[in-house]
Image 1: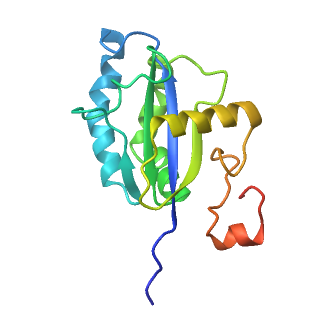
Image 2 (image 1 turned 135 degrees about the horizontal axis):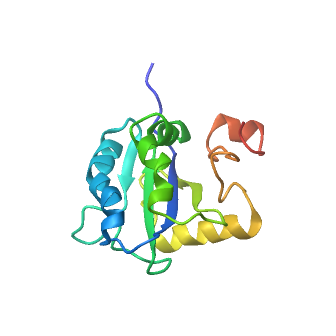
Length: 165
């Protein structure tokens, strides 16, 4: 039995407000972790793509949400693949240390949305989805792990248009 090709992948954007400039020694432990964490993401099952700046190894030089805000954007085959990388790998150790380097966000700082397989979202698209989530709460166009929605082509979507649980 062969599986059919994916019609949709999961895109994610998260933003983080630096507590100090990126070149500050207090942020150095985070900067030192960027390359190994990005390499681990690229090697993780279900990884599809991640945003990097022109000629850069990561996206920290891109500042579309403000000079003190860094962005991370990637595409995954499924929510499970992203969840497993985020919370069931060495990445979790970085997540646990985030208060050392980043300000606490009052508004949503992570947004998920479905993209057609093969599509690489741009920052404008991603920031629009984050703004939509912040303004209107979770929906099939912009959601979180806690309030996810199936892709339009999935059997779950055809049965129930509400949040996945």
